[in-house]
Image (tube, rainbow, N blue to C red; front, side, top):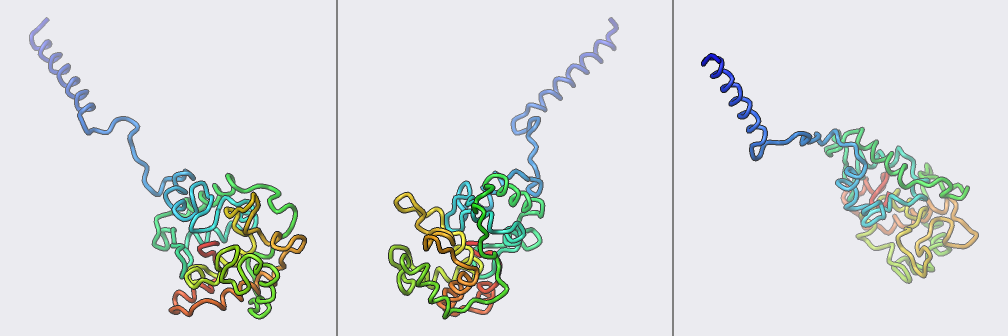
Length: 252
């Protein structure tokens, strides 16, 4: 074998070994270690745990904010309302905007993935047992004086004659009302709070369960919300505007 050819082969072998060694150098990323850009993540579990679980609870079970895994809530709230509140937030409440166009971190596709994931995992056909709930939004303002009468029929037995508490907590607490939008109050009145259970039964039932056989009408819901809103302590204009905004709030 000629010396020149032998030297070439040795050099080629050395280069191959050197390249292989570089591929296994400490700190060098291995195959399949590429990280997706944040805006490309569309996995529901990842998006929900990183953006929603802190307030709405693991698995959507509720916490500081409404339980998103409640089939009654999902049958009541339209997709567009959930999408709008997620994207833009609700001024005057702890719900911030999540859309990148509004200063958040999520793209429109990611917000759509969250809404679709909630429906796919937690919605249940027949959740309303064929009954139509009061409208999600009302074009007519409620009447606080009528709301006082409706409150006494549907709410006073648990929350006390003036709303300051009884078997259940106060719902005229200034801090609570300062953090809840009118739509948030309406949603809570209609869908209840399924996470609160006493003696194996919902302690905060939906619009059908406060008085057996006597569901609340849409007007009665609007009037109770007006009665609650009348107990708010006056706040700065920006927050006050958010509280009266008919969008989803801390309890959307």
